[in-house]
Structures are given as structure tokens and as C-alpha cells.
Length: 315
Image 1 (cartoon, rainbow, N blue to C red):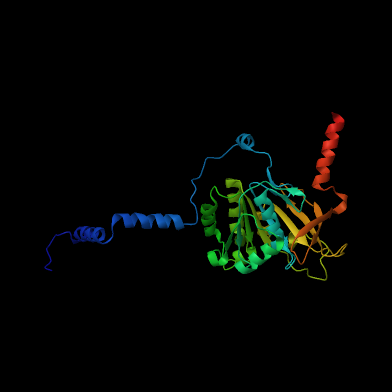
Image 2 (image 1 turned 90 degrees about the vertical axis):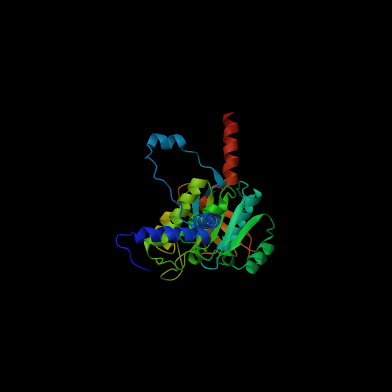
């Protein structure tokens, strides 16, 4: 149209565009889109709080509360590292079953009854249901699979997980690091690779959860594995450092009985470091049994019995 000298076309255009937007996009639709964006924003934004003194931290400190006695504590990320094919998944199913029923893990370690979410990215729904049927697990465990939208768990997905578990679960299981952390821009040799694990540990602490995640052990460089250390955990050292407690499951070099495995605490902020148990895995039923402790240690049952006898003696 004809140009008018000195006329503010810019402002006129902005007003016209706003009118057009209001006519084409209803307000309730805009609000709905904003809510959807907010809901799908997976990285929560936390306001920086003032520093806390040691005195304040100690006043708010709570004693260790076990979800699984002497194995997994409330507010922690537990990393279960094992050799390929050693039965990490079935051991995690046993843990989840004990928590969901308030029973005993390995018929020894008492669990507190909590609702459990199990994110399974390594097994299909069909394989998982068959294994649960074989193990005799029929109790209330909620499963989510890769095909349900959990192919990966990157740093930005931890917020999405927090939204899903908010106030509903006391235990979360993730199988496994190899699958869920794949596809990142960082390789498992980079320290940034473990950032989602640090976020999970913080999530466990904030919400009072026990989070259990499985990982692999590196293949021994020469011959058979004689001993498992923190250097055996697959990935960068940050993977080991990110968890509160690290347990390993592997076959010892000398088999004392059929299907003999060692269940050892490699890192313990709550579990007793270097405590080790001799387990027997049943290849047909996928179930696990505690045979004895290593190095002459007492089992949890024997410790409780001993404590009871000592108190009775003093009384």
C-alpha cells in the first residue's frame, strides 16, 4: 500500500499479528501447550538454597533405615555389577520381590514392604513374564519396558522418572546401565557418562528411595578372575563413584559347590565393605540361596541371635 512518511509500521504490524494469533489460537489451547511443555521438561529446575552448617546437617541427619537389611538402605543408589550371564537380573527380581512383599531377600535379609517400579530395558515383556513365572513371582511389582518409552535414561530423563515415581514407590530397579545409558554423546570412558547416575543418587536421597541399577564387570585381562575390586566395574571410575553402595556378583575361581557365586560389597557407605556371601544359583528356577558367609563371618540371622544372647546375659 501507499507509504506514509513518519508512520510507525512496526508497531502496527505487531498489533495486527497479536490480533491474528488470538483469533487463530484459543487461550485455553495455549495454556494446555504450556502445561505440556512444562510436563515434558525432564530436567527439573531447583532454586539454589542457602548453605547449611554442619550443625544443621547433623540435626537433620537420620539413622540408616534399611529397605533390605544390610544390603540396600533408604536414600541410596545401589549398583549391582556382575559378569555377563551370571544372573544379575534374576537377583534383582528376587530383591524387588522381597521388597514388594516385605519378605526376606535370600531368605535371610529382611525387607521393608514398599511398592516397587522395575524399569526393564534388557528383557522383553515376554522374557520377563516367563522368568517371573519360573521364579514364582506373582506379587505386585510394576514393570516398565523399553517399548513403553524407556529405551534410554539420559540426564534429562531423570526428571521424567521423578514425576512418575512421586509419592508412589519406595524402590526403583533399572536393568541395565549398558542399555539405558547407551546413545549418549559421551562414551562409557568419559566421566560425563555417569552424570545420570549422580542424578539418580540425588533423587534417591531427596525422595527417600532405594534405587538399584545393574552394571557389568570388565573381562579379566589374563586368565580367570581371582578377585573383584572397584577397578573391575565396567566404565569410567565415575560409574563406581556415583553410587552409594556397590555390590558385585561373580563366580569364584574355586567352586566349592555347584553354581557357586560370590555376592560381595565392594563399596559401602551403609553396607559393610568387603562383606561377602556364598550364593548358589539355580539355573532352572532362576532362584538364589545363601549357603554361607565368606571368611568365617556371621550371617545376619546369627548376628541377631548373638546380640539377643548378649543382651540376655547382661540382663
